[in-house]
Image 1 (tube, rainbow, N blue to C red):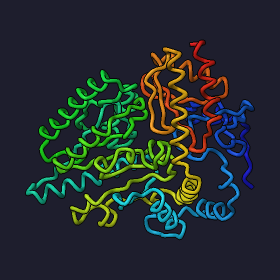
Image 2 (image 1 turned 90 degrees about the vertical axis):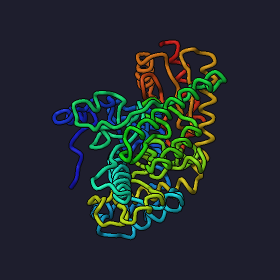
Image 3 (image 1 turned 60 degrees about the horizontal axis):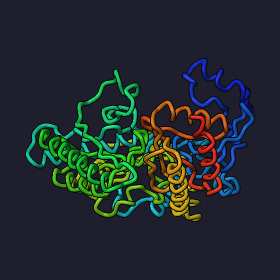
Image 4 (image 1 turned 30 degrees about the vertical axis):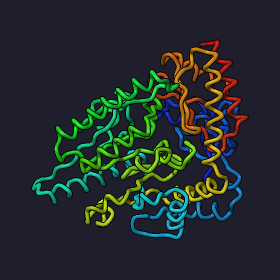
Length: 443
């Protein structure tokens, strides 16, 4: 019989025998954690969670609609016990996941789907779709050798830690140095500085023009050799950096003019936290992507692609095994994702995130108006952030918060990003804001 042999107090010591166990000094109790609170069995305490395992827990912990659904739990167990290879063996559970995703989360302008385990591998396959498409486009134009592999990307971007993605990620050198990388065009990001005053707007437009000039130069310097532009609609690990809709619309024009794909990395920004299922849906029809990568809160990772890929007859979605994976994601994750999407739909959690997020941003702005340690309050729905003056102040704040049973999450050089569950209520926001105000005088 399966029986736990390791006590909560010995978890880190046991792990440290073989892995670098330098994460949070707590033992997460999956059974006792409830709602937006994590239970730490090592220290016998409950923590308010603005972290959600790096934005990957959409409904908090032990949601009653999951716990009390016997059919869901039965199918979850079946998937866990068997773990079939989704790429070749099809099940009702797999089909139900795709059907639910189609209803709740797949836009009509992104009909093609591919599933895999891991956000980095979602990005890898987004790039492979674009490369395959571009190389075949070039052959049709008369090129006789393979060309069309380069990807324009942005400063401070994080797109993963594997293969191709190492050439895109540039947040912290420790994550990419000494690994082989491609020399692909990297351009500046015209992030918005909040509040968006007239002076800020003028400076922002100048920086947008500079970035667009860099992108045009990258296309000109690499004729027929750029397959895509990739961007996070909000650069998350890089510092929760926002861009204007007008800038994304210009990217859309540039990829169309240069026969390239526009890829949105929504691994962290997707699935409701912004107030819409996908964050890019805030930006209108003229800023839609050709390919979207997803993961984290979706439970399953993968990509959605639009009809532009069908300009090439033998694209990766039509050629068997051109892109593939044994498990094609994970059936366990798909069953869980199906139930999560069902709850998001039933309970209107995207709209709830928009409303609660507005409350969070208003609360932060009110605190910032009274305290000069806080600036640049920004957000879309609950996907919200603010800046401290420097990294040391930010890190001290996170540590004091943890000592007081609240988990805050940093990003970039000096930012705090909020990544709560979609079920978070205003009273939970109040608790987090009250603690913020208590900590500020200590910084």
